[in-house]
Every structure is written in C-alpha cells, then in structure tokens.
Image (cartoon, rainbow, N blue to C red; front, side, top):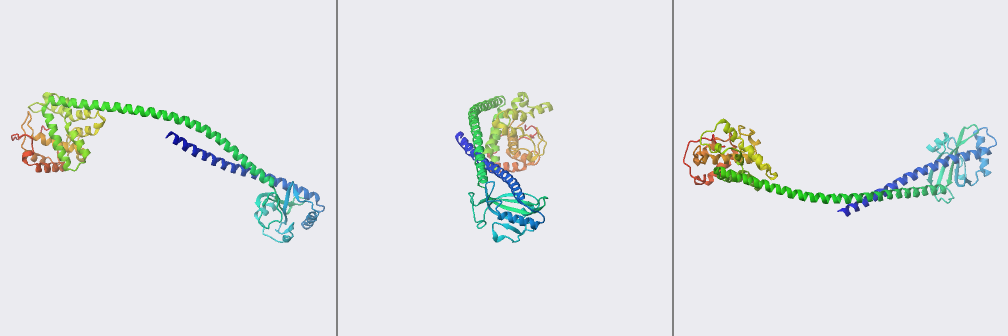
Length: 440
C-alpha cells in the first residue's frame, strides 16, 4: 500500500510539474517574443524614418513626396538589408490604400481596402507581427525560411504629417532563434526548478508516509487491544447479569419460571407476527431478563400476600427502569434494555415508566406485555390464585386496545387456539375471580 501510494504520488506530481513547466515556458516565451517584436518595431520604424527623411530633398505636396520616395528606391537607399535583416518585400501605401511603390512591380498602382493594421499605421502607430510567408508572396527567402517579421511604419513629412505607410517584410532569423532559445531556456529552467521542488516534496511525502505507516500500525495494535478489553468487559457485564439473574431466582422462584414461560409465549407470538430470526432472538433474550430489575425490590414486597400500599406499588413500578439500567451496561444489550424498560407500557398510554402510546412502544415490548400478562393471569401467586386458561383468554380479549396491542393479542389468541386447552398453561390452577390489578 505504501509503495503504491508513493508510486501514484510520483507519477501524478511529476506529470503535473512537467505540464506546468511546459505551460509556463510557452507563456514566458510568448511574452519574450512579444517584447522582442515590440522593440524591433520601434527600432525599425525609427531607422526607416531617419534613413528616408535624411535623403528627401524636397517636401511640398504628398505627390512630390511620393516622387522623392520613388527616386530614393531607385537609388537603392534602403539597400537589401535593414539592421542586418534582409528585406524580403516592401510596399509603400498612400493614405487611400493604393500601393505607390513596391519591389514587386505587378502590384504598383493597385488599390486595396485598408486593413485594420494599415489604419492604425496611418494614425501614426508602428506595428510589428511575426508571419509565415504565403506561397508566391515573395520570390526570395532568407535564412529564416518562410518565417518573417512584417513591420508597418508611418510615412511622415518633415512636419510630422502622416502621408502613407511603409510595409516591410524582414527576414529575422535572430528573432526566431532568440525567442525559440528563450522558450527552451525558460522551459528547462522551470522544469529544473520543479524537479527540485518535486524531489523535496517526494522526500517529505516519503518521510510522512513512513510516520503514518508507523502510526497506523500502532493504532491497529491499540485497536486490537481495546477490542480485547471491550470483549472482556462485555463478558464481565454478561457474567454479572447472569449472577444477578441467579440471585433473583434464589430470591423469588416464581420469577425464574415465569421468565422462561414468558419467553416461550413471546417467541410464539413473534413467529405468528412474522418477525425475523434476529428479532426473535432479541425478543427471547429480552424476555428471559425482563424482570431482572426486581432484584432491586425488597423481597417482602415481592412476596407480600396482601394488597400493596401506594408506596410499595411505586417501588415495584421501578423494576423496568432498574432492569434497563442493569442490562444497558453491556453495549451488546442496548436494544434489550429498551425492550425491558417499556414492557409495562399500556397501549392506551396509561402504563409506566414513560407512558408511551400505541406504536411508540417497541413491538417487542408490546409482545412481552401480552405474554407477561397471560402468564401472570394463569400463575398462582401468594396474593391470589391463578385463572383458568379460558378466563385468561377472555381477559386478553377485554384488554385489546387499552392495556394491550390489538394486533399482538390477535396473534397470541391464534397461537393459543392452535395449542388447544390442554397446552394453554403449564400447571393446572383452580379457578378464581382474581383481577389483573397486581400483574406487575
């Protein structure tokens, strides 16, 4: 992984640096080329103006000026070169766009539309641009091949009035060589600089990746150790819960048997409702520990044969909260704790401890409520005798929509109906008229 990351960094960063160097080289060389051409235009313009004006003998009208220019051309005043640059083509324009002089006699006297560059030159600007000569544009080529520099120079009289324009095609190999050389020099310089930056970044990245690798290994070892500690803690929590459950069973034998029966009934209801295997397992485990909170209730209250006082009843109603707190200590039993906390809620919202209503109560808690109620009804307790299965079923029917979820009750009744009267209870208990007032 480390080598792959370094390889990707190397390839991507090098390509980025290379492309950036090329782009900057192009920009810089273009800037240099523009500056060279600008200087060339200014110097060429000044040279041509000074050379020609120094040779003009008479300046009266534009026509006379043009005649003087023609005479100077015939005398070869400009020669074949300007500042060492061969003259490939020359045109002299008047202010109307007519070519009055040229070393290409076939175009002398022809009228052409004024181009933007000519218009600017006739307004006094010197313009230079790098061009490639078109086929047939000139009969001669210099060392620069088909590449040339085109210069537009205003033609002025002694008073500075622009009478026309000179258009010169100059072979300028030095210009191209200097700008091309600048391109390579700038490119290599930038590339070299970027390579130095890349090497520095690579070394830093490699060092950082080694540190990250070491930290990752340390964190992985720490995570393994923490997981082991966490698992040990979970085992301790579960062991503690089982110990408390055993202590509760010793304290109240009814609770142990009752929890097993409630778990059995709850599983059958859950299957009838189509719960998944995972939810059935969750339901069974929560049912087995649903009354573990009674470990915090005094034994004399749990086994009291008489009616509980309001204070005693308030204590008993705390057992769902106590149970949820005991079970919720283990991270793996958080859902179990929620089910246990709400298994005494009523469907109409009059239950405890949080007075939840309807489907706000977890489904597993609603299932436990029905199973718990039924088993409490048919079980014999110190303060009352159990109901018959038939009577308990009638109580379930009456509790639909008030104490119990109607859908859960219907599923439970379907389960009991399939079992038949002989299997609706674990022990035969004689009939009594006991109510559900102490189903806790």
